Each structure stands twice: as C-alpha cells, then as structure tokens.
Length: 351
Image 1 (cartoon, rainbow, N blue to C red):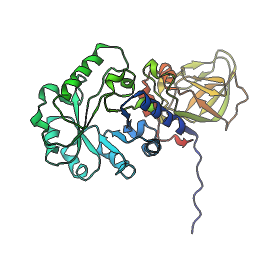
Image 2 (tube, rainbow, N blue to C red; image 1 turned 180 degrees about the horizontal axis):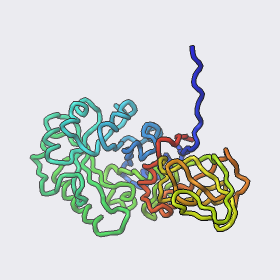
Image 3 (spheres, rainbow, N blue to C red; image 1 turned 60 degrees about the vertical axis):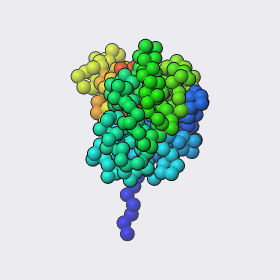
Image 4 (cartoon, rainbow, N blue to C red; image 1 turned 45 degrees about the horizontal axis):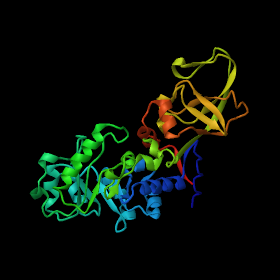
C-alpha cells in the first residue's frame, strides 16, 4: 500500500460567498413580485461551479434552472431530476435527440425546424420567441396555433437585448412578446433577465431568469443596494523585489520605476482569468491598503506595488479588487467576461 500523495496548496484562489449568492437570489425573487425567480446556471454557473451553485439555490427554494446545452443539463441531472425544472436554452439538434428524449430537462425550441423535430415526442418543452434581438427564437410572423397544437409547452419566453439601458427597444420587445402570447399557449411565461427584473412588473410575467446579478453583477441602479459580491480572488506573493529608479518591469517594459520601491510578484495571471486589461490599472488589497498592478499582466504572474505596504513578504496573501462594477471600469471588460472568465487553476473555496 502506497502513501497518499501530499496535497499541493494553491497559489491563487477564489473565495465564494454562499450567503451572498443566496441573498442575491432572494432579493431578485422578491423584486420579481408575483413571478418566481429561476436561475441561469449556464457556463458552469457563470464560472463559479454549477453543482455548488445549484445545491445552494435549491436549498434556498429555487426551482427553475437555465443551461445552454444538453451537456450542461446532464451535469446537474442527479441534483434536479424530480425536484426542479431545467431548460436547455440552445434547443435541440438532431444529434441531441438520443440524450434529450431520455432527459428530464426541457428543450427551449428556437426554430420551426426544432418544433417539428420535437413535436411528435409528446414530451414537455419551452418555446423561445424572437422579439427583436434576432439571435435565437421563432419570429412572430411565423407563429400560428397549428404550429404548436398538441404540444406540452411549459414556458414561452423571449430574451431582452438592452434591459440594462433605458431605450425604446425594451418596450418594443415587450409588445412583440405580448403579441406572441396570444398565439402560443403555455403554462408559464418568462421574459426578464437580471436587468429586466429591475425594469418593472410588466416585464415579470410568471418566471424571471436572473443570471449575472446572482453572481454579483449590477446593471441597473435599482440593483445597487441589493446585490452583493460573491467572488473574491486572492493570490500569494511568491517573490518580493526591490526596484531601483529606472528599472523596467515585465513584458515590453510597460512600467518603469520613477524611484526605488518594492514590488510583489503574484502567482496569478491571464491564464487564471485576470486578463491583460488589468495591466497598469488593476488593484489588489491588503486590508485597506491599495496595491496597484504594475506593468503588463502575464500568463502566470502579476506585479503589484508594495510602496504603501513594504513589510509584505513571500508567502503573504493579498486580495484582488473584484467587485464586478469596479473591475469592469479598471479593465474595460464586461461584468460577464470577468465572472465567467475566472480560470480553473483558481481553487474554489466556498464559505
């Protein structure tokens, strides 16, 4: 019998706040009024770990989940089967049928071809309406009662393109969706994403589909005091260096020291999802002390300024400023890119 291999401690982690996740869902559920909030858990629950997220949200009372494809549906089937509904947003291809026909998940049918493919199955489905985003969905002019006659339609839904903005498109999409509801019979109706929930009760219908705001994203002012940060990356200092005036730092000398000071080198980089947009603009923290990112972010390493915290040493840990709104301003990346891009090398630590 051989000894077990020793555990290799990570050099960078992301702390995930269970209480914040559940609090966000409850706040969005309450803001949804008479509607019930579901949860978009596609893309591995926006990068945080779909099984961990679904288990926590199910315990909080969430009963509708939205994934992108059948692989994602299969990853949570043992958690949700008989306990919650799962909708597959990308619909059903011919190649998906062997799995889809035995899965408890429902396809969201997005085209006339998908409707015909599924119609004879007798199994539940959802229907996606193209209300003006022109991505997935059946056009209003192609809808008729005979198209969906006899189908077991649970939800009819559409997707808002500009809910984070006060633009005429929101009202136009609502009008198109309401028109479709007169044609497609369904048990439930769903239109609003995270930002759409904050647009008002006329967008809520029966089920809302929050995604980004579950994980800490804020897209409209009405959400600012309700949504809490969920993901908190941290990294270990693996070397402390003393720069002299004129010393160049990192690839392409994007930082040159104007005076002598210390820098810490962190074992984290764009391979971990901390992308090059944070070069010379990101921030780490030690307590309340700000430690700016210096120079270009590289694949595995980041340099931070220790001028205001010169006693930090190799082996100390620092916190990444990763409030999604703040980090988006620093990097030029969308809040979606920031949260879904957190890399697999970051050890997930739920608290």
